Length: 184
Image (cartoon, rainbow, N blue to C red):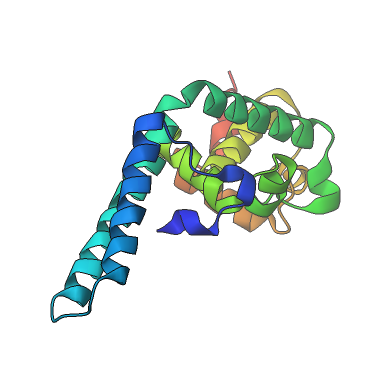
């Protein structure tokens, strides 16, 4: 139940019917705790708690589907944040944009952001950031005369070899080979 590590403002959004289901489960658990203890008490309590957690998971995952407009806005804000990060050359000063950095800037917990992105894009936050880094590096390699090392440093990589390795993994070619594909 990873959602227990979220911030307070990332609470579970429930419909009236879902809220009723949860309240009834709590009432059932409370009633069981008030009953006399017998040899089935523990099994019944564990089953009710498991049911409560299963419903929590269901409702939690459902909210990524029903709140798509809000979540797409978060992705748009994330994309603008990264675009500004690259345009303003923050990588040179601060290094690569981290999951913590973008989550903090978006006022979300790291876990919630990753779950939301995974639900909508199939990628966690780290993978999403890597894809955006490669996308930005492609723009830079195809439209500037910066060396591969300069592109790496501008993006925030400490070592150009790390950049080249990520680029090759994500694209199947080296940054230099990618650049040469634009030569006549």
